[in-house]
Image (cartoon, rainbow, N blue to C red):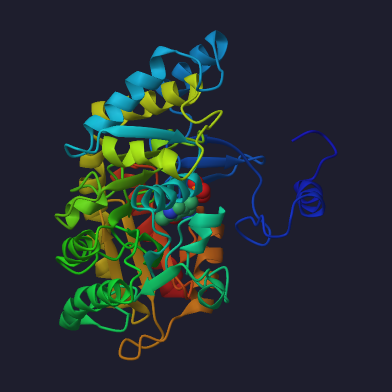
Length: 432
Ligand code: PMP
């Protein structure tokens, strides 16, 4: 810390100069100065375990990524209309990770841009305006990505203020949604009925968008067969299927590199961001050549820094680490261990409703009553605050902010996972 600059002074300055909606974690947050693997250190040298950082997918300050970025920054960084090797190489590597037919890449800089472009690709390639989206979703803040975002966590008016081209279907959550347990099989036919009804009205949708694994709800798997049925319905009427893989894709689920693989379904357009850049703003949309080519009918596309030399090189370095160190395997092993230990905590503490998720995308849902599922919203905030005191960065998610969103860097060790569960156990044992 520069002498004479207490951290609260910088926090006040942040509040004065930034828009209020540009929030930060915690009322009085530690001022973070550096990161290493799954750890963060503040300006006083206090170390925290970072359990929420799906952006730092390969860990903070990974030397392979730092080295590649530094080298490239010294050589060249420019807009994507120049011809340089990295953009083609990175696009080839990304497309190779996706099923056949998803072979054409657009590079952007964020998840919002990726889902916005995906929605506009659906509109341009079908010549239609209507989009069907799942409720309780977050897809981004740009015009089209915000239009299909319906989570009330940050915007209580989300549903009543969507544009008229957005049509929604129920959040297919088998734990606390409209249909629970075995009844969750009803979500897919109901969503199909919404799509069929739109077509019958003469406005067949351009596309359907959802997360392929319900990340915003804390990592709830969609009911078996859900995406296959809904994708088939939207295609039957000439529309296209969009999978938002921004949070759950890229190896985090452990067993499945992409969320749609868990559903045994293949989308027409995939939106990717966050972990792909390891913290650098990197986003991508991957689709078929045919859909990509029809984009020109409806829009202009040029992203100055999307796929820039530095972004492309960083993207490849991140992918090198994910592949060489088998981070999906680590997500499966450490995530499996973590989930079992969290479930064991649930046997001791009534407040634990369910542990959702797969690999290193887990959600621990707190309820006041296991029968009514009344969300333990204030308790979740207090538990997160107490965890910070014990050295763990953790945040709530979901429409009721009652789910711990557990998505640490994919390099997390079993020891760190144990540290987190031990700290959480202590909080639950001793109160918050
Ligand atoms: N889609 C999903 C599922 C997300 O979780 C987010 C960000 N939380 C976005 C899109 C938007 O990504 P970005 O913040 O990079 O614009």
